[in-house]
Length: 107
Image (cartoon, rainbow, N blue to C red; front, side):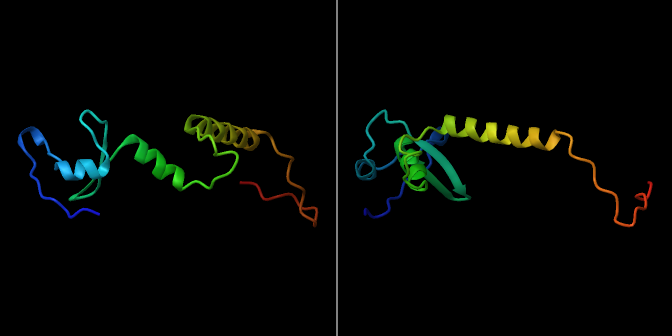
């Protein structure tokens, strides 16, 4: 692990990543990175592959996730939600009368 390095935010909000950190992170000129603010004062810089690896690490390795496809997963979740919504919107059997035979109170 490298020691932290100091740099400054320059004109137009640009930040230069020191060469030693670029090398340690495997960044080369023109490499795409994803930058996100974790909280005030903390910024995370990751390559798209690092993001994918981090997400995959949180998913248990099963036959279903061996070929991870986020789009297919979202579509499957939407289909499940649609089926649940459809089930909830179908008319249900009427409620049974109370055992006493009395009508339910009117509103």
